[in-house]
Every structure is written in structure tokens, then in C-alpha cells.
Image (cartoon, rainbow, N blue to C red; front, side):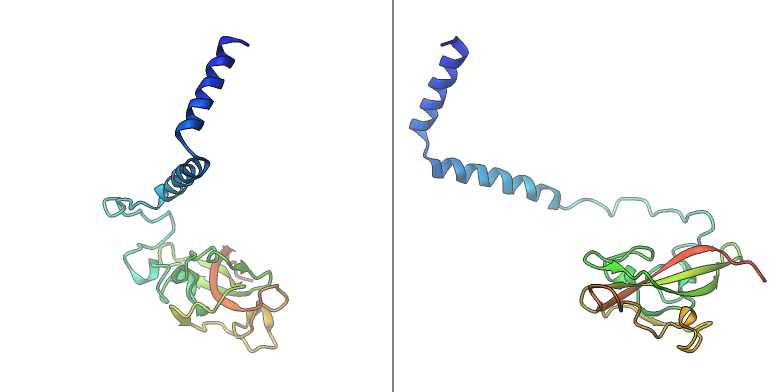
Length: 178
């Protein structure tokens, strides 16, 4: 037997004499749980500088630039709960929900650059109703027989989770006059 093998065997036997399997497993579990709780420690985010608005975005200090406000420029034709108040953002659904594949469309003017943009309003489906930040701005809303321009339809139908949760507002492109 090589020196390394002999040393390893003696060390393993000495460890086995000093500890039981239960104490080893409890120490291992403590180490794993303690390591997994490490990311949960508080982080000093208050000292972080506020993000400057992206080019073409309004100032976030104004209602037209705050995605959690009904007056946010992208929400001109929204009817529902804002995903940004429900754990998501104005462009992504909250965790545990999925975005509907069918949408309704609106055209909103961005006050920062004065251009009109086509906005796709997608419902987030599959979880309980959010119930926070309800907005009903029906600019350009058409009756239900114009389904692509009606915000009164539950767009979650046909998905696994048909429960409506909230709505996101995604810029599709710049609107052009026809």
C-alpha cells in the first residue's frame, strides 16, 4: 500500500472513531443550508445611483416614465393589472406565469421623442389574479368584434393556465401613417 493510501485509510478510521454518521450528516446539512441562505442576506441597494432613462424613454420620476403608473406612456390602451406591480416588469411576466401568444394592439405616443409606437399588450396567464395596480385606459379600444384591437377579451384562453394575472406592454415598432 502506498504512503498516500495508508495515510488516507488511517485518517478515515480516525474520523470514523470520533464522529457518527448522524453528526456528519447534520454538519453536512448545516453547511449546505447555510450556503444556500447566503444569497438571502440583505444587500445595500439604497446607496445605488438611480438608473438614467434609456434613450427615447421619459424621465422615470414623472408618471409618464414610471412603469408602475397607469400614466406610463406605454399604457395608453391597457385594461388590466400592471405586471410591473405583480412581480414582473412592463415587458416580462411575473414568475410562475406565462405570456399569452395572442395580444391586442395599441398605438401610444412617447412624450420623450414625440413619436407614435405600436404597443403589444400581452396577458400573463397561469397564476392567481394579481389584484394590484389596475389600469383601464381605453384609448383606441374597439368593440369585441375587432379582436386584435379589443382589450376586453381574456387572452389567456387556449393556454394551460387560463387564469389571467396581469398585462405587459411591449413596443413592437414605430407607427407609420398609412
